[in-house]
Image (cartoon, rainbow, N blue to C red):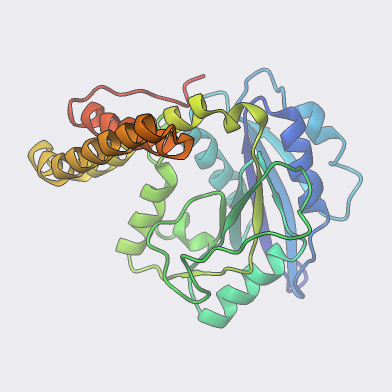
Length: 304
């Protein structure tokens, strides 16, 4: 606490995304700050050559919010996020927030996050990440219809989350290195928090935007993401369950995905329907991903 203010550490892990990182930090610098709270920004660069330092330097002395830069030379998403936790505790943070380096915050993001945690008396607050092709907030955007404010989220990602530092302090939670290059470390982290009795809430008004770069709009990338997503889903389940249990759970799902993929692809060929073609390829990729996960063929998509 500094002068009776609670410290909020807004944490950003980055790896060789200078332009996107700069945009992310610029948005954080403009957020509205809740009364009696003091935000700080912690950047952990997972590039030992400090490629993100150039983007960081323009912020460290030019804003009311204090910015801190660290390097985690041990490669991996979990490694970088664990470093962020350690640095947040070093700065005596009461609340810890995560936002990805390819995202940017709505100006009311922190206000609504803190308000939600106080209103619902929870340990973890999560919000939507809205995809955009822009690097600034769009004038209009579609709200998340799957979740409503006040609901308990099924899975919690680290792209838009704020939580009490007790998760890292008294509960000693850390991101599992098992997921360093697969992803899914955030789902695992907050799943463990829930098992320890930590309460969570969904806040649909605590908005983060994600910039979708041109390379990630291509069908090739979308298919690859669903393929590796299928692997990740199975491997997350296998981490805490037997291989037999994994087969029993995902074999029917895999068969369902592959059969529906075949139907979509046949429809696409008969009617020259691009939408069905895309749908079929995505389902096929997802189903094959399940098979890879079940047979222990791991594709680490974050191992640059």
